[in-house]
Image (cartoon, rainbow, N blue to C red; front, side, top):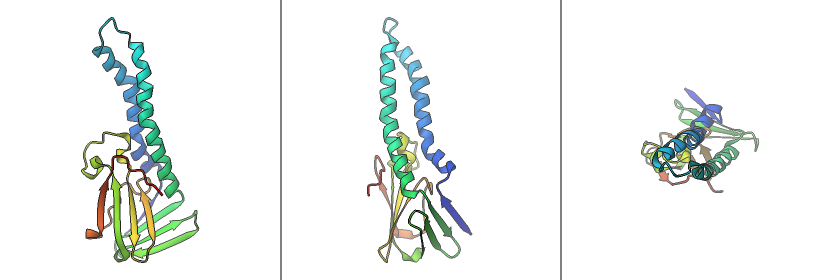
Length: 172
């Protein structure tokens, strides 16, 4: 059976929904918690300054990682055939298509946060973001982000390695 993966709204939502949770917490839950934790003579308005700062501390890194992931896989499509065990990666930006079998894979490094690798609760908004670097024996390299395939786990045995990172931002 052939599976086709590309950037979809569903994958973007899986990754970006954490910003809505952060926003909801900052706007609704934080003031309620602060109200019950402060003395009656304290001014709650003093804490309204803290809420946007906390939100920006989470939103800016999340926005950066989302835009970086989008720029990496924009216009790309991956087709995986689990019967023939081959992968086709099409890149419309570079106008190219590459096909390889799973036996041609030298190594896959899958970078993700520790909570995602251990399938635990996510603490930071960017914990759902992850990417895989696929290295082939002929020297080619492909980067697949979670906007394209939410969690890439190809059956390559011990050639698959998980790398944990606090902030899985792909460099060059």
